[in-house]
Structures are given as C-alpha cells and as structure tokens.
Image 1 (cartoon, rainbow, N blue to C red):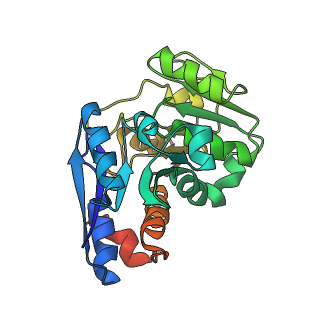
Image 2: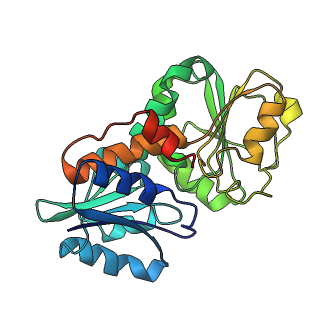
Length: 264
C-alpha cells in the first residue's frame, strides 16, 4: 500500500489529502495520503523514510519549501532556480526534489496574460511560493516586478535569485496592474494586508495563492472595488496533478467534479 504525505506548519488548512485520496480511490490505487504537522527537526527522519521506501511521496508547504533542500540528493531545474521544493519522491535510488508550483501557477494564469505582459506586477511576500511566482511571471514579459515583504532578510535572498526585481517597503502602495498575495496572510479570517486598495484603483487583477478560505479579505477588498480576482485553487489543482503524475506515472483528470470537490 502506497503512503503519501503533505507536511507543513500550519497544515490544518490543507485540502491536499481530500484531493489526492479522491484520485487514489478513483483510479483504484491502493494508498493513503495524510497531512502531518511537523517542525524543522522532523525533516531528516521523513526523508530517510522516503529513502527507505516507507513513504512514496511528500508534498511540502510553508515554511519548509527551502529548508528541505539540504536533505535531498537531486533538484529539478525549476527547484534549483527557485530554491523551492514542493514535491519529493525516490527515483533511481536518489531522493528527488521537484517544484510543481511553477507549472501549477503558469497554467492557472495563462488566460490572463493581458494583465501581465508589459504591465506592472506587485507581489506581496518573499518566502515560500514567491520565487516560483517570479520564475513564471518573467515568461510573460511584465514591464516590471515589484516585491514587498514584512521582513527584509527574505527580500535580500530573493534579489540574489532575481536581480531585476524591484524591492519596495512593506505598506507602500505603488501603481500596479497585477497584484499577488504570496504571504500566509489570509489563512485566518481576520487577516488583513496593509495596502491601499483605493490607490491601486479598479479594473486590475488580484491573485491570492491561498485557496482555503476561497475568498480572503485581500480578494474581498479587491472585488468590492470592481477588480478581477482569482484564488489559488486552480494553481493548487494543477500542481497536485503534476505531483500525482510523478508518483504514479499517469496524469489524473481535472474535471468539474474535482474542481467542486474543494468547495464542499
């Protein structure tokens, strides 16, 4: 029987088990997918279990996407460039780290290119998934990418990876066309992000990588002001589809039933 995990801290919000267990059941694969709350000291033991084939695959969420890298034998190109891993498994006797967030994000925003190409992008946050967002956004040729974060240390690391991004102060609200929340602010219902929505204006595109809750205060505030909004549900589904394929050697279908599965 196959065993899969998603690890993080916090982890209660994750809908990964619901999705992956649905696919395992649908395709009659004997296995189970669970969520596990962990701390830094648990990483080495979990990777050892992958090495010993006690665990067939692990998804990684905040705050371990970079921390897990030192325990791995090999990184994919995207994982190496972004220094972010969200999928781990054993292949050819090596424990491999992959970043499926990149393809997940790219597929989720493909039809919204008009909000990105030759436009100003503002990213809130600098950790976890943000390097993946920048990696993908650069393919769409934005005019410039502005990044802000509550602490400067992560911004310094991000600037080393992507020297052409522009750093702005947290709480500063520049002119922007595509505004992304890459922080964890929004997981709690009372979370607020310190930006001036009125200054940004209307007819812009707001994207939140958070998918649970489906409409964060960030998206609610944007919608009130007649902006286009999108949460991270499709990104989540696409990245999960890629992870499932890496572990089970075929691509599960994303249909209406799967999309609405997360709404229950």
